[in-house]
Image 1 (tube, rainbow, N blue to C red):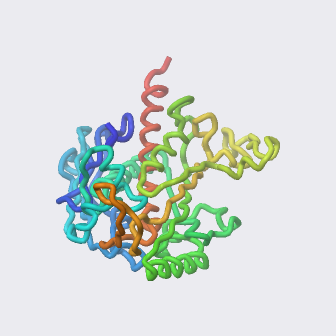
Image 2 (image 1 turned 45 degrees about the vertical axis):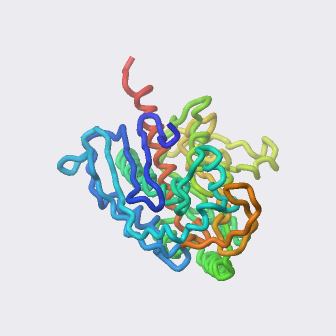
Image 3 (image 1 turned 90 degrees about the horizontal axis):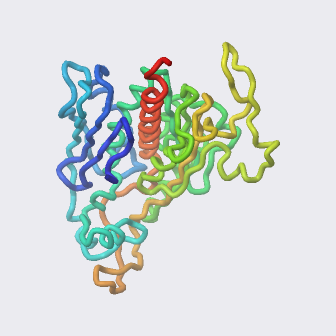
Length: 366
């Protein structure tokens, strides 16, 4: 079903923005994994609202509760159920949206698909749904770290027309460098300009979008499938399932179309200590749909937040032209809080492919 993601490591998220709670059920988590709520809470704290003056002021503690699948501090192999309660609901702020569709939001399409919708904050289409993804991703991240020292790091590289200089994106940033700024851009000068821009558009009742880059190191060669479940295809599917995403590119991406094959090809060379490496990484760590052992590098484009505090032309449930001035609490730019969500989805894809690789190619010794 469309609310479930993954093959062997399967997650199903549930809940709405202004319902009593949101959460996730994880099926296929390996047994005997040491796990506590504290392993999950750190990532939820990075995603939660109200953490700075750049994001929605909605106040949610987002404290995770592990309801099932854990015994004496270890996973049991049965489904894990995680719950986060909603405490700061203000559904009255959305009364006008019961009858009117917000431009570029999911209001109209949900109504067209189901014949009804939860208008309170977008219901299921709200980014509040990603609480479950982040919680599940924190567990996937721990499995990857224990299995092979895999590190997943996402960060903001562009807000509106403000971008980190290309020369500054050479190194894999530390978590401390990303978290040093509330906009989660590891380049201090650009981060300061981004913060000013977000505050300017918020004061004008407007919004901006941008780009998040994600890098993953420590992934062994061999993850991914050769045709329909190519690793980059599953990463793209995961990222484009996130609210407000409008684009995905891996490695050289669209810029690679400007190169000739002789300029674009990643030459192979012996890896120090044994194995194979590539001299360059324009493939972004994936070739033929399968990881090659290099750093996985991809970009995700996020549109400006659809709900803005300006009057806009729209229609109502009956198709009549009208105007809407949105109320409620919304992010003027989704990118600062989306960083950890991108990391979570990358971790979910990778742990699922790692398990699939072990199941097919690591079980039998012929």
